[in-house]
Length: 532
Image (cartoon, rainbow, N blue to C red; front, side, top):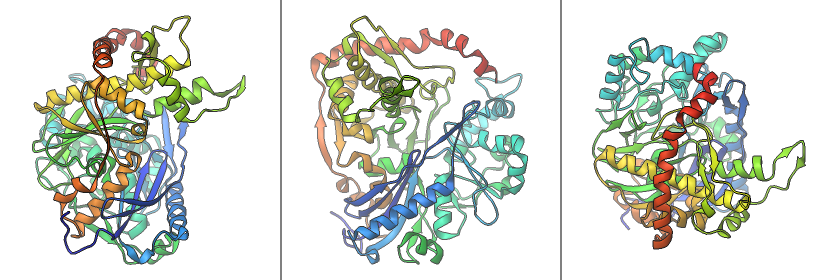
C-alpha cells in the first residue's frame, strides 16, 4: 500500500450529511471506519410539495455525534489529522452575513418552484423547457442545466427571492448543506466547483474553476453577490475554530478540507477510481456512477459528467429520487401504517428481506414501477407515479416486497444502460454501495436484473465517510490517490443466476414499456400538478 509521509493509523473526522441526518465517524487513512454514530434529523413536508430541514438541527446532531464518539474513548482526539464533510447536494441553505442560517434549508425533493423555474428558463419558443440559446449555453459550458421542474438550487433561490422576500433580504449567500457545515466548523464561507454542481453556474470545460460563468449566472436570474466564493476542489478551507472545537469536543486548529457531494465520495469510498469502473448506489435515492476522462451531457436522459474529486477527471451524475426509501414507504405506509386503523408494529427491514426471499425471482408476476416522487433519470417527468402491477387474488406482502426490490433494480439497469449510451463506453467492475447493499438478497437481485456480477464493498452503508476521509488524506498530502482502490476492500461478489437473469431480462423489457405506456394516464391524473 502506497503512502506519503503518514501512517494508515492517522484518523479523519468524517461527516456524511444525508437527507435523514448526519453520520459522524472516525475513519483511518487505511480506509477502516473505526467508530460512527448516526443522528436522525427529520424532513418536514409543506403544502404544494415543499420539503425542508432545519440546518441548526444538523449542526446540533453533528456536535452530539462527535461528542459521543469522543466520550466512547475509541481513540485519542489528538489522533485526528483532518475534518472532511460530504453529503446531499442540490439543497439550499440561505445564510446571513454572520454565517447563520436564515430559516430552513430547501431540500432537493422540494418542487414548489416549478412555475418560477419554467418562467426563468423557458418561454414561448422553449424546447424541453429551455429557451434555445439558454439551453445551448448551459450544456456547452456547464455540461448540464437547471431543471425546469424547480427541484434544484435555481428553483430554491427563485422561490426565496419571489415568494419569501423578507428572507431574501436577510440572505447574504445561498450555500449547499456541506458548505454550510464547513462554515460552522471554520467560520469561513466557501464553496467549490464540485459542491456547486447542481447550480450549473461554472464553466465545467475548465476543471478546478474558481469563478462563476457570468452568462450562466445571468441566465439563472441569480444575484452574483449572493453566491459563495469558490476554492479549488482539493483545498483546505481553514482550521477548526475555538467555538467549533468547544461544541464538538475535538481540538481546535485541525484542518477542514473542502466538502464533496456524496456523488464524489461514494466513488472514492467504493474504490472505483479508474475510468469507467462503476458503482451502483441504493441509499435514500439511487444512482450509477463512474469516472471518465470526458465531459458529456444528455438533457434527454437527465445525466452529465461533472468535475470529479480526482484531478483531470469527470464523474457521472444522475439520480433516481426514491431508492431505498421505497422499501421504507412500503413498510411504513402500506404494511404497518399509523392510521385510523391503529399503529402497526413496523417490521425491521431485515424481516422484509426474509419475506421477499420466500417468493421466487419475478415476484410471482407482480411488478413495481418505482416512481414515488416522479421521474428524474433517465426520464424527467414529475407527473410519473409508482404503481404495483399484475396483483392477483393470491398476491400478498411477500410479492409486493420482492417487487419493490426488483423494481428499484430495474430502474438502476435503465439508468446504467442509458449512461453507457451517453458515455459511448461500457461501465464495468460494478461495486454496490449504500444501505440497500447490506441485503444479500437485494445484491443478488441486482446482479440478476443487470445480468452482471456486482461487487459489494465492505461496510457499504459507510462508504461516504470512507470516501471523505480518503479525500482528506489526499488533500493533506498524507496518502497517494493511486492507493485509494486498495483501501476500499470487497466483501463479496454476487454473480447472476442464469434462470433468474433470463426471467428478469424479459421483465426488464416490460418495465421499460411502463413509463411510456402510463405517461398519458399519469399526466391526466396529475394535470393540476403539471399546470402549477
